[in-house]
Amino acid sequence: MSFSSCCLQTFKWGGTPTGTETKLAGNDSYVTGDNKDAAVLIIHDVFGWKYPNVRLLADHYAREADVTVYVPDFFGGWVVDYELAEAGRFDKIDLASMTKKNSREIRAPEMEACAKALKSELGFKRLGTIGFCYGGWGVCHLASKERSEPLVDVISMGHPSWLVKEDIANLTVPVQFLAPEIDPVFPPELKTYAFATLLELNLPFEYVHYPKIVHGALVRGSETVDKEREAMAAAKNSAVAWFKQHLH
Image (cartoon, rainbow, N blue to C red; front, side, top):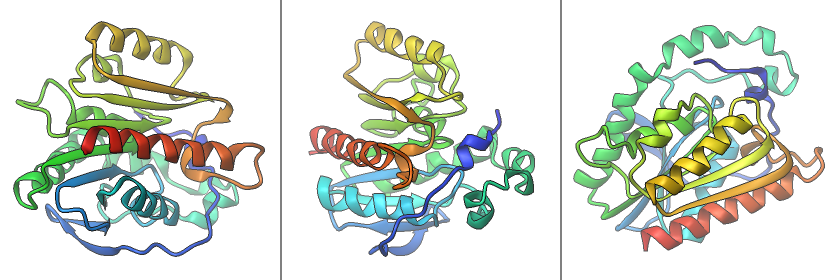
């Protein structure tokens, strides 16, 4: 498993996040919203838990889906250099080392601990999770039949990466795919497999296709790329509706 340069293309939005920073299962975390019964856990992409866009998305989910949203740090304090990414200087970012330090084996236990803490320690009755890029495998892990019981009640993922077929085949809860057309890390063959497998599993699912949109767009939402900001907003609305349907 690895990252490609398409994962690092970025565009920072304006606006100031309204949440606060706290701890969740020992991990630094951004939190926003005040619902005591329903929560959403965001598993971030390569830009990490401090990326302004993901925090602003969390604020939208909290307000519009009436949930409390947590964005833990699953990179052990590592933060990508946004300026290098925005300038397209991907050769200056050590993705190989970052990939090694944030493997499934290292980060999956932290994701499990955060999900468990939200229900057992903080008392949330319903829990959803959404992951973008790197976070895609993480939400599948939390909803897998390999757990003694699912740690979440519903999942969503946008342009997921690091997915293998078993991640999809082992799902046990309602699932939403937010899938740009142009995505080398979630290629057509895997998209087709996901659709067919979810039909076989007979799980509630939603698959949203974004024609001519590229990997990363649903968090990046660049105003300089045709239709990208509109796709990002549409994906946000789809995720909000999905969580409203399954968490309330």
